[in-house]
Image (cartoon, rainbow, N blue to C red):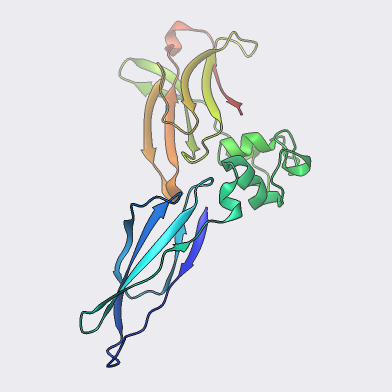
Length: 227
C-alpha cells in the first residue's frame, strides 16, 4: 500500500532557509519512531506501508545555519489501510472491498480460465489473459538426478493465503505436499529448494519434486491455494 506524504518548514528568523529534512515514521500509534528519510531536500515522498496498519510521521527540519525545527505528529491512517491484503487487492482492481461480484475469489472477469484467487496468490496481473503466466513444472538436472521443478513468484505481504506445492504420479492423485507457505511466510518442506528476493518486493520461489525421473514413469506438480 502506498501513502503519499508531504511536509514543509520555514527558515526561522534571519531567513536562513531550510537545508534538509529528516522524516521519521511509527506504526499503529507506537511511540517509537524510526528514520524513513535522512537529511533529504525533498518535501514529499511515497511511503510503502502494509494493509491493516496505520502510520504517523514526524519531521525535523535543519536550517542552513544548523538550527533544528520539529513538527507535530501527523497521522497518516487511511481507511484503505484497514483492509485485509486480499480486500485491498479487490479495491485496487475492482473498486470493491468484499468477496462479491467481479471481485469474488471464484470470479473470472478476464475470462482466461483463471479465477481471482489464483491471480491474487500467484501475483498475476488482472485485466488481460494470465494463462500464459501460470507456473509450469519443468525437468531440471540436480546432483542427485533429474526431477521436475516449479518456479513462481509470491508476495510476502499477501498474508491471508496458504500456498501448497504438490506432486503426484497421476493427475488423479493422490497428491503429496512437498512445500508450503502459510500467511506470507517463507516456503518450507521436503521439496523446497530456494527463495530469493525479486523486483517489487516479491519473492522468486523454486520447488522441486521429491522423486527422480528415473524412479517414476510420470510425475506431475501443481499449486493449491486456500484462503
